[in-house]
Image 1 (tube, rainbow, N blue to C red):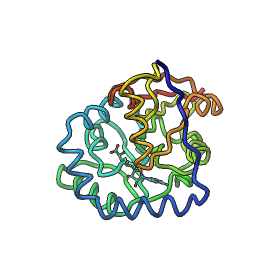
Image 2: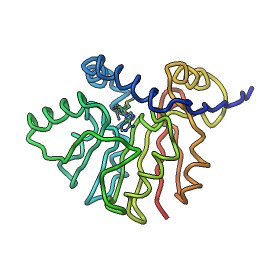
Image 3: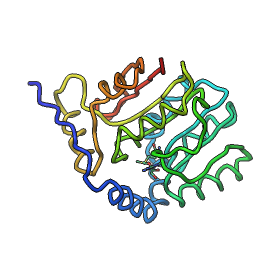
Image 4: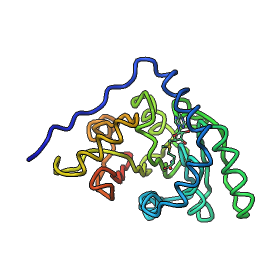
Length: 213
Ligand SMILES: C[S@@+](CC[C@H](N)C(=O)[O-])C[C@H]1O[C@@H](n2cnc3c(N)ncnc32)[C@H](O)[C@@H]1O
């Protein structure tokens, strides 16, 4: 039987939401990195983005400990931004150890320090649901993306069937604090053409490929 997909309202105190999560990421940064290394399914979800990235200029917003960025940085002129300073430090070290180049920095998706229409692709995984203001975040990513550029996202949503274990999985993500949004209307509002494919988590993890029109 189909169930109702209830999406999550944005928090009232957006600054506090970001700061609280940021404290959590700082404390558990090493564990987060380990989890990315240990769980093959997590790496598999992130890597579904790679065939859809087009260059030359690629920005990853909210790279976390940077596993995904290190997988494609050699192929593109790569930039990255994340709110968490510890994550920036950790990725900088990884890049140095691997002899890779990428222009990474600390910053906020709500105020991206790049010119309009600068990037050919933006990569964003498991992060949109961590932003307290979806409109501001999407406005900024849209602004810095070229016309015909690709926004390649992995994030949580309800399974298309609205049935089964996937519904429980999505609710578990929500219980952990994720702000799950109905992405279709958001992409349409910004005039993106998009596809939405379930890639794991019993249908709770989706790959969104959105082209800026
Ligand atoms: C769940 S983690 C995902 C990390 C990584 N992309 C992955 O898939 O494993 C969410 C990430 O969003 C980042 N983040 C949260 N709020 C942000 C903001 N306002 N601006 C930029 N990054 C932010 C966090 O620092 C964290 O790296």
